[in-house]
Image (tube, rainbow, N blue to C red; front, top):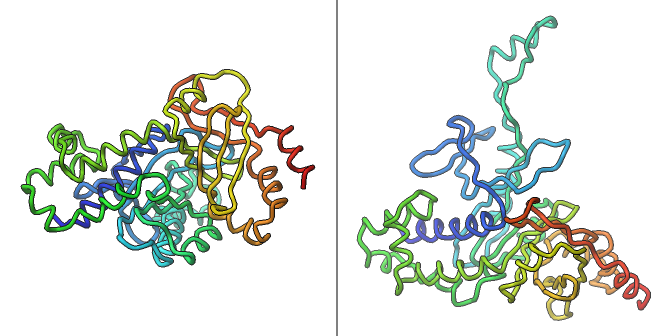
Length: 340
């Protein structure tokens, strides 16, 4: 078993676990359009069947639209992820969204104006969004291409400690060879989401690189929320306070937000809820580009807050609703607007 395959599966596990913790759910294969092959989840497209690294349903769906699904392509490279990978993601999104089952029978039926059935395949259709997740960051061309094509990006460097991200690259073929083939197979089975107590016991055993990464993710997932903007952009909200998520989940009063940034990190903002708990997040790439085109002007930032961040839907796992709505603090927004 190659180290690159283990690293890729470990990254998939981390991304899947974080999203499931925020209320996403696994997509169940139907055996035809989505199926299992050699432990991989495959999704049919217009040109081929593709390996879907992390394929999930969001906690909520938008009305008057086909249901959405999210697929993250995971790249555990040691270098930054480049433009070619993001272009491939765009091609994948096109291929699986444009796929349609057309048979000779369906085509023949179209010739009959008095036909009793529709000349289309009777199946549930979905809108698939394809994102890219990586251990390292993204190159500037990759970042800009993703922004222009609305491809969500996720880097472990944005929220996990550097030493944990570095640990991924310590998983080499020589390191993997220090374990038995059976141990590695059980680990891979566990990372792929299969019920494997031996794989779980192995990754929970202290002293391995796998356990170091696993423990960091388990500790971190209690401090992350996923937010959705009205534009459809996703936010990964990180808190240093273990009680921040509990505050949002259990607080029944109106939740208002303020957004701040510092000049030396223009793409990293903070979100304050009722001035009680704080979360950090990286701006979606398309919003960064929008702000960049206005020379990162302060008034432009106020306008972005007004237009893009008036509401944030945050996904939570407890409560009657799967989300809470964070409304921007209008009085605060008016005050900072008047000061410019």
